[in-house]
Image (cartoon, rainbow, N blue to C red):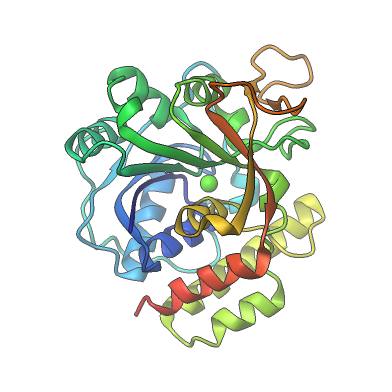
Amino acid sequence: MRSIILDCDPGHDDAVAMLLAWGSPVIDLVAVTTVFGNQTLDRVTRNALGVAAVAGIHGIPFAAGADRPLVRELATAGDFHGESGLDGPELPAASVALDPRHAAQLIIDLVMAAPTGTITLVPTAALTNIALAARLEPRIVPRVREVVLMGGGYGGGNWTAAAEFNILADPEAAHIVFGAGWPVTMAGLDVTHRALATPDVVADIVALGTPVARFVDELMGFFRESYRSHQGFEHPPVHDAVAVAYVADPAVLTVRRAPVSIELTGTHTLGMTLADLRGPAPDGTTTSIATGIDVPRFWALVTDAIARIR
Ligand SMILES: [Ca+2]
C-alpha cells in the first residue's frame, strides 16, 4: 500500500487521477490539496469537492492552497477546461467540508505525523503548494518518500514550444521542488501524450455501467473536443492519471535518472524542464524522468480502479 497526497487543479485529467487514487487497491489516498491552475483556486477546489461527491470519497481532508504563483502573474487554462475548470458533467454539491488549513500546512502536518519515508507527494498542477511546504518546513524533505509529478517534458512543451503548462504556471516553484533533494520523478508530456482516452478505452469504462463511469465518459467528451479544437489531438491525453498510475505500479513507466533544470530566464524557453541526457546521471542526482509508458497497463489500472468505486 502506498500513501499519497494528491495536489491538483481539477481539471479533467486531475479528476481521473483522483478516481484512480481513490479506487486503486494499492493506493491509500490520505489527502487532496488544490492549487490554482486549470482555473482559479476557488473553482478547482469546488471541482475537487464535486469529484469527491461523485465518487463518494470521504474520510480524508481536502485543503485549498495557493491562489497564485510565487513570482509570476496568474494564468489559467480556462480555454481548455472550460469556464468551471471541469466543464462537461454536472457536478453535485460538495459532500465533504474543506479543511481550514492552507494546503501547504496540511501537507506538512501529514508528512510530519507519518513515519519517515511513507508519504509520496503526487502533484498534478503548478508546484506552488509543494514549494511553499518545503520552504515552510524543510524537515518534510527527508521525510517524504518521493515526489512523483505530472509536468514538464524533456522533448518539448505544450503551452510554449519549450514549456509544459504546470511548470510554466510557476517556474520558480518548480525550481524549488526539483532542487529540494528529495527524489523527484517527472512524468512529462513525453509519456502523458501517449495516455490517450481513445474510443476503445472509453467504451471499456462506459461498459462498467456505474455513475462514476458515466461521469468519466462525460468528462472525456468535453476534453476530447477541447484537445481537438486547441491542439489538434484526435483523443485527449489523461496526463495527471499517469503520475498516480506510476505510484500504483512502477512498471507502467520506464524511468531514468537525469539532472533536470528549470529554465527561469530564457527568452523563448521560460519554464522548460531541461534534462541533461549526456551519459549516466552523476552521483547525487535526485531527479528522474519518464521515458516510456506501457499504455495498456496504464488503462487497465485506471479502468480497474473506476470499477471498484460503487
Ligand atoms: Ca492538473
